[in-house]
Length: 342
Ligand SMILES: Cc1cc2nc3c(=O)[nH]c(=O)nc-3n(C[C@H](O)[C@H](O)[C@H](O)COP(=O)(O)OP(=O)(O)OC[C@H]3O[C@@H](n4cnc5c(N)ncnc54)[C@H](O)[C@@H]3O)c2cc1C
Image (cartoon, rainbow, N blue to C red; front, top):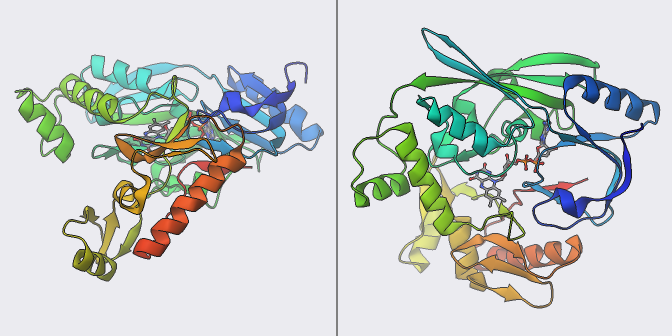
């Protein structure tokens, strides 16, 4: 209890810099501190949530009526066997620093996930992915505190039930596990082509033919820096909506009206449309909405920027405006990617 801060502004704990107050908040550095904090919160009958850097959270203006635990649990260790290198990383480590360390060790598997903001512990939650890699491809196990049984548990990748930007941590087991570390299986050596088109193009135009993990990391960093705002200086939560997955007949109808409709094929005759394209075509490319203080990022309309909003209600109002226009114009429903909490 003595380490709990009270009435803490949650805008400091979201890269969108919006949200009400947490009734209680504490930063935990190790498993023992986590267990003590949970025990104290349970005595007070408080809801509990664990977070990292808040780069995928939109807090409501009402705030969080319980205890927010911020993970600062550190650790980075490597064990080799004949299959590869098992890398165990504490949940409070900064994800991009962990990626950099694995690349320095000459390991491949997560280099295309470079520069994704946030902490290691959040990566399984939405199965983070970018440029052809996702955490589901390399995660072997994770350790977590189970709030239901009050025990530390080890979950395997199949327990996590990963899919596109999704896992049990966002569905059936939402709020149940406080992740303390993850273990990845990475390989020594160089990644093999084909690479994601944007990465291939970058390598080709820069005359890079040695496909080392470091070369791919540098390529991804350069591509991301050119396209995305840095949440440390510009308030944003990355992609605001998922790319919608629709039946191929929806694509066919759109292709009758537009000469090019960006899309990717997925399983079962479905296609994934580009939410950025839909938003831009609906009139929100490089757009500033004076009424709400929210803008879209000039080089990527899917990223919403908090330019001058001071309430989450402003952001949600702008998001609704975009959703409505896209639904009217294309008959496609956009779903919000960052978690709206509580
Ligand atoms: C500019 C920008 C670009 C981005 N690009 C990408 C991208 O390319 N691909 C992608 O997938 N995502 C992307 N994101 C989203 C975001 O970076 C990731 O979702 C990231 O993993 C969130 O990390 P975090 O520590 O900030 O998590 P938070 O926002 O703090 O938390 C996110 C969720 O995870 C839960 N959580 C966090 N830590 C723990 C823990 N230790 N135990 C249990 N639950 C936990 C929280 O309760 C919450 O539900 C981007 C965001 C921004 C701002």
